[in-house]
Length: 289
Length: 337
Image (tube, rainbow over all chains, first blue to last red; front, side):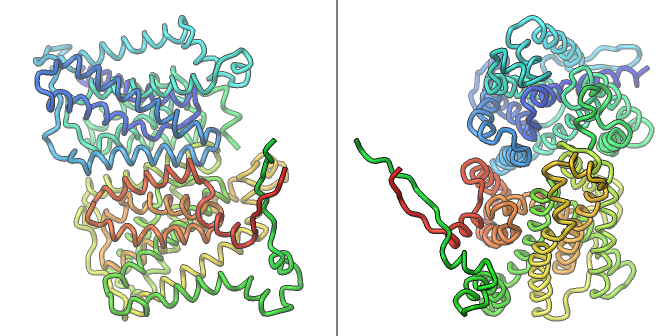
């Protein structure tokens, strides 16, 4: 029973982390290798507001952290990616370089060791089906489900959300209908970064803010997206449940060191068996040579 | 009304003359063709003597050439095959560990361990990268990004191959000149060899794979097989650099999987000029000494590379080499529109 509860929590954690990446990829076709860096940026900013400016209320610090992160994301597109749009090699190198610059810059700026932590929203824990779960993890599950719901409504009932789906399905046709592709891409990067920041705020209280987390987050996000099918949102949820439970099971029965091996093995098996991922049906022809 | 002016670029007469058989007509034409190449070769060969009295910088020459090899491998994969490799450290790590195992655990001498490590490392790297070769898109970049991180974790977690301490006690090179010239000559061989390779039939097909894989496939050529060849060649170069570095430091550890080996080659290629191969090497010759000067900054060096790299990719994507080539072959003048 414990395994199921922890598995569900872990899966929702993973899907929170990867939603931002898949949103950006599905709309702007930019593989955002700076995703992990944005995640850490948001955590670090929130910490700065809390720690450096004493008396800053926590909710406000969170809002500021997420807000600045999303502006950073939008600026990355507006000033850098827009100039190299469509050149795949340059896009990959540029986002990777930006991500590295942020992460290693933070490391150089003193983001090391155990001093950087965010407080949990509420302390304490409850007993669910024999497993002790602290409130922070419960909030993660709740916020995760809320995020899915909001994203679903956003992409179906708002104008920008519908534009997102249009661009994701067929960029040319969407442009003919008057949807500005660059504008939606900027907004998608802003929202994607905000999602990364939101996940960071929820998850970082469980541990320390360290640079390595940035790399791990990027890798798990990519693993989930590849398995679910790059750019498929339903796939993200299914894939994060697969990886989430696989990780919890290996942790319980083998060793916690293998979490990343699980992610990589899952990617490789997916690439061998069904390269377009679980839900990547319509893109299947495009991706296999 | 003011007259509109436009910049016009015209090939130099000398360039046009040397393109044909007339190149052998006069010493001037021959010099025009051979000059830059000879300058590069002679300059590299002379480097160990130039820095004779600066032993620290003599070591930098070796590292510089090793990075140049990695940069050539990256340039070849990215601009001739269309595969972006974000993990050059994967090649150096595998090559370095193989060299250490052959040399320390099996007791093979250095002149056997480096070549063997190169070949077996290249085979292993190609094998690990196989799953993403039949696919197009970002999968190759994703998988190569993950492997160095993954191998670091596995070695740390399982405590194999010496764990975090690494394998120590590799043989060093018998004398310092061999140490320098081994890498300088091999870097030159690979540089000019790859320039030929990409113009052979195989190279042309590989470029076809980059530009339009469907048409290559329609010509009855197996795209995956071509990519396997390309990845083997690139990882061969990378593993050699790794094996050499392991022997140079007499140590193979998880820092062979470090980020430096991934990002410096990429930065070199972008700065030097993608698709020229020489540009990749020249980029490494600029960046690696710069990185030594900036050693005091620690990880901030990576930030500097990344910013320079992004700047070049956005504002000056042609790179230094293509700029220089243009200046060498063409002159510019203003003409009325």
